[in-house]
Image 1 (cartoon, rainbow, N blue to C red):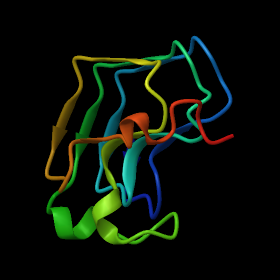
Image 2: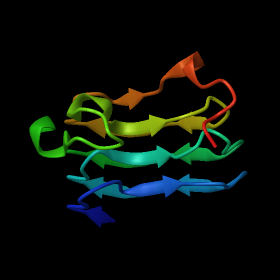
Image 3: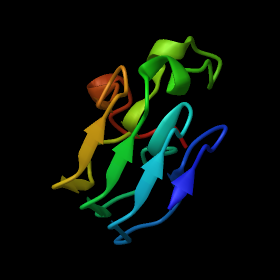
Image 4: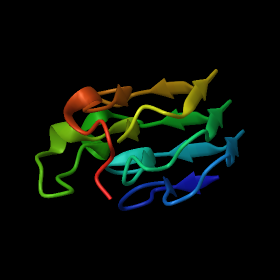
Length: 106
């Protein structure tokens, strides 16, 4: 479990075919699970519980952006599988810039 993290609960960075499964994250600021560059491919993010007691607790400025850019899962890139996760209390459940970074940022 990750409890009261000041910024990001789990970061997926530069890895492929990883399994991020059955984690509990509580009051993690900015984002619960974060794919950092968008070059991370074919990872499975499944059966995680990502909970914020109040969205104001977890919504903090980060990445040089305002507090509205966080979320339970923050994904750069669109080549990972997100299955059966539970997200509660965040201002945004799943945030992705979509086609803004089709080839990632790294």
